[in-house]
Amino acid sequence: MEWIRVKILMPFLSLVTFESFVLPLANSIAERVDELHITYLEGKPWQDPKRRFYFHKIYQPYGFLRSKMAGFFMAKGKLYGQVKDINVDVVLTLSEVWMQEFSRYCSRRMGVPYVVRLRGNHRLVREAFKVNALKKRFLNYLETRSLKDANLVIPNSSDLMKRAEEWGVEKEKITPPLVNGVDTGMFRPMKVERSSEFTIAYAGRISPEKGITRLLRTAERLTDVHILVAGANQMNLSFPRNVEYLGPLPFSEMPKFYNKADLVVLPSFTEGFPNAILEAYACGKPVLVATEAFPEELKVFGSVTDVDNFESEIKTLKKSDLTVFGYRARAYVEKHFTWDNFSQSIINYLKTVK
Image (tube, rainbow, N blue to C red; front, side):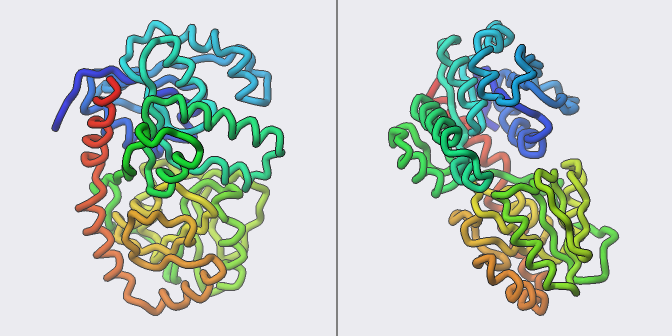
């Protein structure tokens, strides 16, 4: 395992929102660098028995403001004052307007480069949330500016690599797509208590861009199918009788969740590189994914189709030998999508901006 002498700062708005993805990503990086410092406004640090992380809670002086971006611009100097004594060589952030702007500001004040891990098309997310035109234009501008100013942009899919160039990021600053990894020791086939009915599962936020309403419309017509839904509910929805909503589950419970299903579904309008697909594959589960949500870097084990075809496709897959799909899917991710592969690649990129 290659190790480099570098100290990294990763800022987060909320550890609650990102913990399921941040933890494996941060673990994979922390094992290869001198120090990994994580700053955050909300949530609490996870258990770190190996003491590889340095956590720094920062406080928003204007917490009464509803707009996090307004609060950032009013207090960016005070926010920076809470982290300025952290000695780092590079700032690494996941893409999101607040985190990108904070990283950009810290980078300039500290005199160190900053790198953006581009993980989704946030413009399409704003469209799905029906953000008002003025706010959307302002956020799009800030997001584009901080991407252009970054020393490096690391997209997690070919689609996002193309988008970054369309948004004006210099081609030389954009790396080839770097896909996510999955812990196949944690996510694996296992025996669990489950329904005797054919079961499909959705894991993710209950939010407009995730296409959950499209899935629920399908559920209403599939009365002989048991549907499991897990994730934080950000919408005012009622679930059909055959849908079992489990709420947000701890990351440690997700392998059991996938193993309760015959098929994992993803009806999103937009995705970068969905962890749910890799996790399902690792658990030996095939997937049914909306065309616009499936990254071209992945092989299909199951089906990729328009959401309007989900009902008929579920009926077809129900008659198939899904065990064979699942066996091949797990072998595939074991070979190609390890966190070791991810961390080695991202370390190689970070070495170029030291």
